[in-house]
Image (cartoon, rainbow, N blue to C red; front, side, top):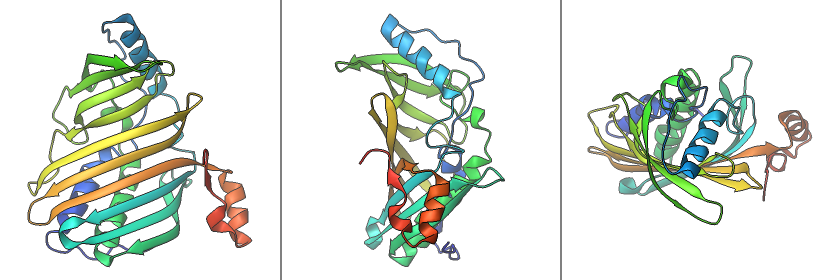
Length: 262
């Protein structure tokens, strides 16, 4: 695993955002403290009920599942880009470990953006999931609209408290499965005075009602340093980790972890 370089003026604030803000949102999931909520029309209420019932279930992106992780990052003002391809699995200490397959790009973006994001994910694993989960305990839900043959219901989500890791924005729920297929918004509490705004957009792709790919885009506006952008693609690993390790030992590691749907 590559090492995080010492912080540098300006760009280090990007790392601070990732560590303080995204640590609460990167892997957030867990059982809701309160699932009492009712909205109109009935179809939207049923979709929300299904979503809340599924929040407590293990998602394909969280422990103990192995995930193929691909990160593209850029610092437009410095014209620097970088990308990472890695396998994320879980140690006995219930924290994510990363097996890097490939990392490329400028040193600044690799060390101060990509590496910081991986650090934030590790910190997120130690964050109480219930404190940041998108549930009635933390958010107010307001129905907005629906669309599609199999309806997707859009809700406005507003945090009940101004707390690190919570966002104000929208949540779209697949009516048939209750899966959150789109989330978008801004952090309601800036983790640093040097951060103007942090926008998060996340989309989940389904195949026969099963999530097979999650794409998260982060747009961070940092004072003095300009913008930082990250796109994180996650997909469940096929085959499981034991087979991956065996394949890597035989020298075929990069091809051993594939997306569930190509």
